[in-house]
Amino acid sequence: MKSKHINFTEKTVASLQLPDKGTGQLIYYDSGTSDGLQLIITYGGSKTYYFYAFFQGRPIRVKIGKVGQIKLVSARASAHTMREQLNNGIDPSIERKESLKDITLKDFYENHYKPLYSNILKRVNSIKSDDVAFYNNLKELHSRHLKSINKEDIAKLHARLYKELSAYTANRMLSLISHIYNKAIEWGNYSSKLDNPAKGIKKFPEKSRDRFMSGEELHRFFSALYQEPDGSFKNYILLSLFLGQRRNNILSLRWADIDLDNLLVYFADTKNKTPLQVPLTSHAAILLRDMKKTAVSEWVLPSSTSASGHYEEPKKSWQKLLARAGIENLRLHDLRRTLGSYQAISGASLAIIGKSLGHKSPAATQIYARLSVDPVRDSMQKTTDKMLGYV
Image 1: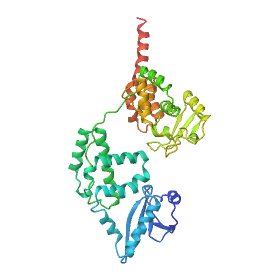
Image 2: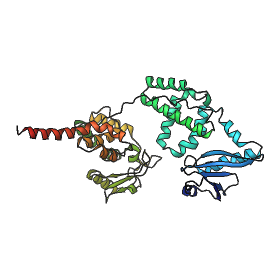
Image 3: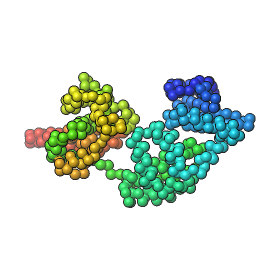
């Protein structure tokens, strides 16, 4: 087990190499502070911050959090707090365990789960979705201590949300509470004392949405869209349909991400955290070249009124467009499904469709499977007709 003193920075910590197999762990001490912050790197790839010091003549080590799940500034703050406890005659390792022992669900979510995990690793929209699920659907459990919530409590709530709202809402609640408890167990040294009450509860089946516009609907849709007076809204809708990408990727698109010479768009920050390169069709390229002639911002869809600096989703304009087109039950995300559906109808393989839409799992593309069968059937029909023509 090797140890070394270095000045911790986010960049330095990220660049530290893993130990060779069979050599044990690597231990680093933060020379940037005197608070006892320690970093342990394992052969398996884990990098974890700890507080390490001596209390009443014996060594103590308290886990703070994993690199990537907690920022260095937060790790240093935790180490400093534990150093103060030690100076005041308090064993930080015992204090750490006791501090989470009788914590309520709401307290843990707001003061531990969000600042140490969500706000660091999750996207803004994911954090908002978590807040909706937590404050709307877990409200009755907010004041309960973590240790007092049992599996029956979660199963009953899961069933009620399914009956009163939807399978989607019930399942999102289940996923969130399960992850909250996993973090509580990981951070609170609860491994032998705290059970995850969501463990073993099966999610309800969710019906996948496969709504896309028919040819007749597309005719009415484009007729209504080209009458749209708001140029930014019209461009947003056209780019959504031509590129087939998720709402936030289209809204936050920068000119620096577009290569009009090679007809490519690069999306660095996608939902599945995998960078995506999407080819531009001639229609998309013509539209973007025309937009760039008057571009005055880094954003492809700029806005002078939004906090982000780029265009935000206009729900009212979308509803007015659908009303003019006489189309019902269509969501903005269905523009993405429409592109995928017509790819399938045109004979594209599921692998091609999945790659163009940025699907990480083949299962996400399966809703287009039935549509991709039609071109195959048409080809087989024409072939057998020709063969039978010789009879």
